[in-house]
Amino acid sequence: FGREQFIKATTLGNVIESYNIYAFKRYKIEPDIFWPQLRKVIPADYLALVQESKILLDFLLTMATLAILYALLALLAGPWLWFNYWLWPLLAALAIVLSFFFYKLSVGAADELGKMVRASFDLFRLDLMAALQRPRPLTLSAEQSQWEELSKLALYGFSSDFALKSPATAASAPEGQ
Image (cartoon, rainbow, N blue to C red; front, top):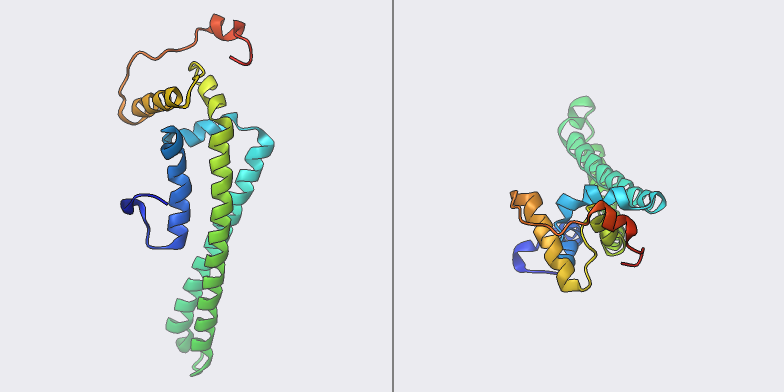
């Protein structure tokens, strides 16, 4: 999905990295910096769908982690509680299978969340630009330049002369401009 330095060791890591890097590759937007601001301009019903996807991913990852912890506890503490030669390894194996099951489900949930995040940047980035009082770009390359300039300001404190809309211009401009 990208350059070699972005490839992660797991499928889940690659899926998450793919939607984290999408906005930068396409629009030169730093998604980690501008996601909180973008959430403010996303309509509440769409944002609720994104949050549901995030909650599902968090739940599945929590379940996978808890299953691994249970497997470790079954192997380390189980025999001390009640010695049974076959019970604890069997329970640990079952917990590992369950953890793998939740991990596989979390990959699908991360993919769905990624689609929602990518669509959020596609649909609402210009609304964010308007909220930041930046002029609406006419071309994709002009938009990329504006986002790159905003990203430099947000990340490095690099400031330059931004072409901000004046309140009078913003109020008198037609909706399509």
